[in-house]
Length: 167
Length: 167
Image (cartoon, rainbow over all chains, first blue to last red; front, side, top):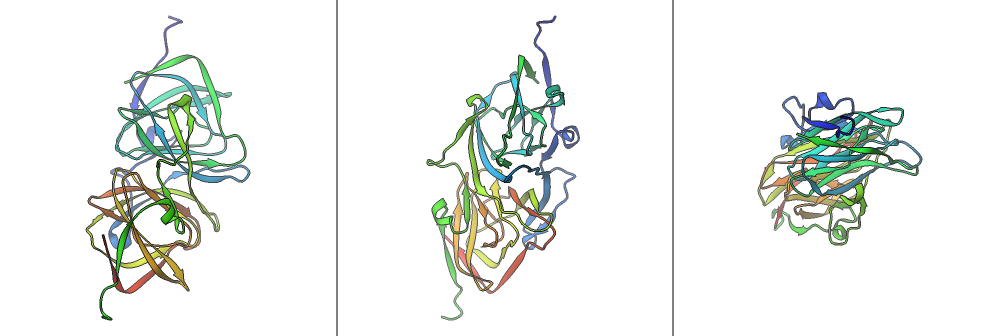
């Protein structure tokens, strides 16, 4: 069995399950709002912790255009950002795949995969191991809020053997 | 003629036309990108200036759920945020109405209206007068990046007579 590929089964994404890694950016049945603009707009306020540190650090807003993948997905590497959080919000109703892990001495361990459903985005906290951006079904643009600054903010970890991520 | 309602004709939204007020957040034919994630994702980097100041100031990510309006739109007030920028990106393909103004001694003047087309969002710079969030056609959720902090960050100006905003 030692050559059998490790598999990860994809779970449904919820605030509670994702809490160790960051926030789910969404409006759900528990969401509170403030009515603004004379009541024509509902503000669901401050849904994600934006973490920014380092020399000349500032918040950056970008668009990531992600190619679609089929499942099962083969996970070869993970990454993390020591100087800031990173949020992803799809700009069309879409599902995407999220893979996160705990850290053990610089190595991603205890991997978990989530399926983000329509209307859900995520914010990875600083230093949380996560997979690449994986759109499903179709090319998808995401609004990304992360950190710009002087230090190198990307750490990569390549697995010796890929994980198989499946429903 | 002195009781005739003032009208504003809506223009098409472009980076160039919007530059005095902030940035258009979009991918267009001139957009440069960085290939990341082994080439499966294109990063269109740092499309908007996030401005954050004040005591305990930080970036907030929120969702605004905006009710739809019909055109012509009646503009009764404008607002501005002295302590930070505010960006709006629709989470479904949609058009929305943007009204901005120059400032003259604390009064919005020389109003301009833009129609954001599908794929376009905007970032208002700090202290730029702008109208309320105006979705068209259907209820629309927007991802909003703005500033949280201790000082009051909202200044309102009510017009004596409304403006009529039309195509």
